[in-house]
Length: 447
Image 1 (spheres, rainbow, N blue to C red):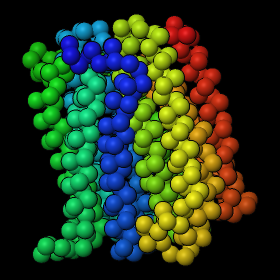
Image 2 (image 1 turned 180 degrees about the vertical axis):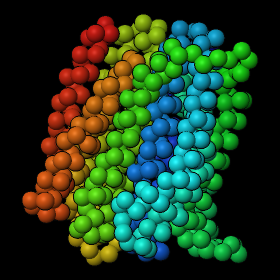
Image 3 (image 1 turned 90 degrees about the vertical axis):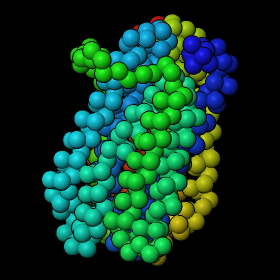
């Protein structure tokens, strides 16, 4: 199979770049969904920006379910592609599509029934609440594009076609970027829709991405096919998918829980602090996307090599990916250190936001190298069928250690001290990730 030859024979540094570069670009473009929304929404008012930051945890949760399930499907697909098991490849792909549609139905129901409950649990400000409800309800009720596009992109990635995965994401992102000002401010004769317009632009972009990904799979991916003929849900396949997928869902959802918890800690100080944290998290996600691209590329590479029992190639992949990730994280640190005012300036910041945000960005950036090692090792071990290391490392750095320390520091020393808690949480997480990854690789016979 042509699609497996690259994973099996291409020199590792070239393979990592070949697979990760399109993923890096596509994830960077994908992260523009939220950044562009925030840039335009900030021009409406700081309350509007605070509203999109307040509901961001729910968006992260939807992404968590889509990405986590997709990663689980990707890992199982890659292993079966490496083993050349055509029947199982088709069954896993069909199961993946079914799971994405079930997830869509669940979030649609929650969008109709729970939006107001969530928003009013976090704010009593009537203006911020109304903006939040307008934005979140649209994103949840029309989430089909997000979840389906994520699954079909993973089908492409499983056979090494990260370029076409990138194309589908870029198609959606460009659509969103073009539609944002048109719908928010009412250009081309369209009435201004404000915050709701930003949400509508986002879901239209996601649907464009989904249609593009489905079409590209049909014409460019002869290896992964979906078949409903004689299909039956196989509990063993579900177990394999969620052995990696469920920890990844939890891993991704941890970001949602962390943002919600930090919002709850910050909002007694001011809505400006909440708006800043939302901006920081989106900026950090944007700068971390190249590392996510490397990690996601490592999953099918490691999974394929594990399926074909080429353990030396697994070690080579990890030794290739880690230094690149560290280099990217150092660059991100420099950007945050040198240009904090410029980064925040994209979001029409008030003087209060600048006074909170400029020192905070510099403090936080010290942790980026530690975070990159934790992330990359977690992704690589997921390719071996173990998603627990990724989940645990993320939980330590974003939730278990960080949130209690943030609350303690804020209560005792004020809001300006909150960011130092990241130094401790990231240090503990990277130590765990290194030790746990070595242990799993030893048990799997990789080292």
